[in-house]
Length: 479
Image (cartoon, rainbow, N blue to C red):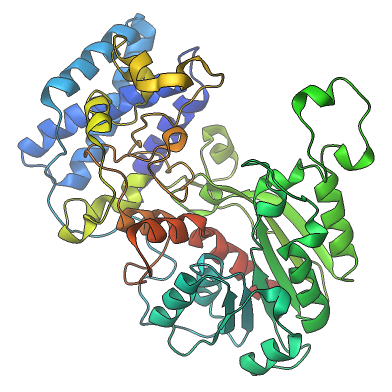
């Protein structure tokens, strides 16, 4: 990536953080629709899709600045969206071409080994473990209770044993026997124990204590297997979760019991890790800061038996000023970077389609836009009960922006509050686009129905992030 493109991408990302009192969603929509307009013209004049898009982004960024200075931003945005509604279509870009964003593992045919091994628990689609495979680890065993997870692993890694069991019913001897290792011979134990027992989402039914959750089993595995190091991934919601949930009304009308205090789940988790005897670090890492074309924050624990544990160093940024002080940081990768070469390809059509009513509403939304860009006459009708609810509701009737990382991929792109609609086409993101955003190899086969594929991919750790973690572990263990 040459310096001019780096500077252009950082300038655009910086415009979103320094908005001059203009709504971020409006800036995103302005850039999206103006880029589409210019790109259409450049392609008609014979420019290739790569050159046309960069030139269009540069033109729309200049127009944004001019509109702000001349105080006609709102008028220009409105007229541009009206032009989109009358002329909208998915641009017919040339098919194929070179991917702009290399994957940690380009395909499933070439592996390199670094002499280290790993065991995976709560494996899912292997998002966390593919980063370790990319870094050269020898994956000796995988585990999950999901049949689809086993089928996915068996399709792609035919020689790696899979333990289809609830880990609470698995003895350490069975794990080590299937992995062909002994106590203390495992280099890295990885896992993302299911977060439902102590998640802040959902209806919070049941007991939220992590001591009765899959996390307890992961801690048991550390104590009994005695790996040289471990890596655990969790949702950030556990930082503020309470051992005992209480309603918001209750929190303000009486003194709280110790287990009702905010953050008590996380304090319990730290006590559990302290009991292992390992040195460990933890932190919230944003996948976009490590080259992923996705804004996705996850809580990462890295523990080590001997030596000093460290988190991986950030490689990408969205802050122009920060990049001036550290020229080694690259701009965040975008949805365009990850998927431009597969747009228009026949094998990019496996996706959920919009309903009739959704098609009607989304026909008004420009690239990068959302519900606020619907005509005022239909906003209330489209939003229903959510219209009067609080919050920005940025995920409603949302089209992705080409030139930013994707929002966090969820287990279904059709959820109203976290909609993931293609920037131009009248469909949700495809399975192949989901895989590209998460960093999966194109030939990594996901097992199950269409809905199950979205779930397995959406639940996974972004592989650019897991690759950065794995490379850090190589450094720690080799040194």
